Length: 151
Image (cartoon, rainbow, N blue to C red; front, top):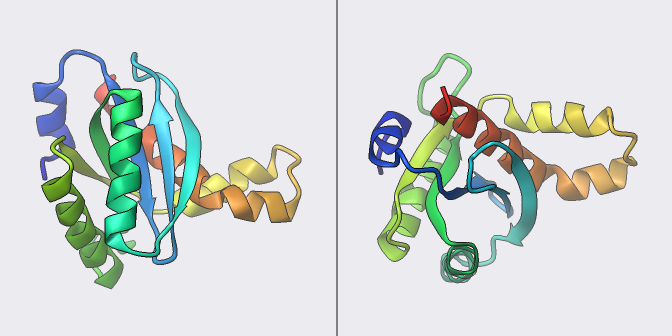
């Protein structure tokens, strides 16, 4: 895995990226445009097996000409690594072994909270909001990363 700073240096050309919110049951997926201006929700993948997840991600990467993956890193509020962050790191390394594009971890503290607050302001009923929370969190993560890359 590379840092977001290394990714920025290597990829001066704009390209499409996907963002992932790796939950224990579901994975939220978002995608950005080629200019890396706007992240949008793409889908939610049920986390049945790592093989199924990797195959679905390979399809998304191939179909959308994806050049990098931004994965939300659930650090503790003090910035330290906890159990969840270690799990995300391990899963990301397994994905990276199977999909030959750069993967960066992005600090996702409060992304789910932020995604839920934003969707609550959009007059969406609670059940729909909860169904989309994973991909909205992935969008929140990816938008933060592409905003950093554009500065």
